[in-house]
Length: 191
Image (cartoon, rainbow, N blue to C red; front, side):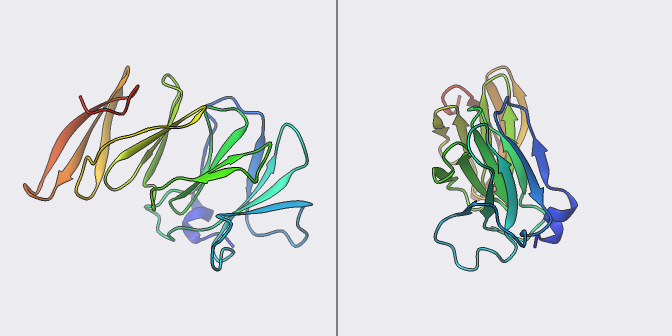
């Protein structure tokens, strides 16, 4: 069953063109479709709080994606995002983000941030952007495009995106202050 936070407001961001359709189910179906996948494959008690997503790919039979819950905290996002590659879906369950190939759902990547604190689709740059506690990671049509160096001791904010630059602030432990940063969205390098 979905956590209270996910039942109230899972995100649905279909910024990028996609070949699939999907819906977040309120609970695990009593009769599973022929194809069912658990993400990650080796998770203890994956069904407790897991997000159940019924995916209908462009080719092949529908499948159930059971996405293990990261954190049952409203600050950790949950939902579905389209990806720069039209056959891939991003499912986020309590801050655990899973990039799934809808044509071959056994192919997936779990984004390394645990938790992901924010997901943004950047249409112009064709990137799906993930914010963690310390840095940013971008995913393009080929997979992981780049990851920034550490931008914060604990917590960062994206304040503005203009053309190919991202502006934000990150908290610095030594100065106990928010420090501004600017990132080149083409490379992930700090400018």
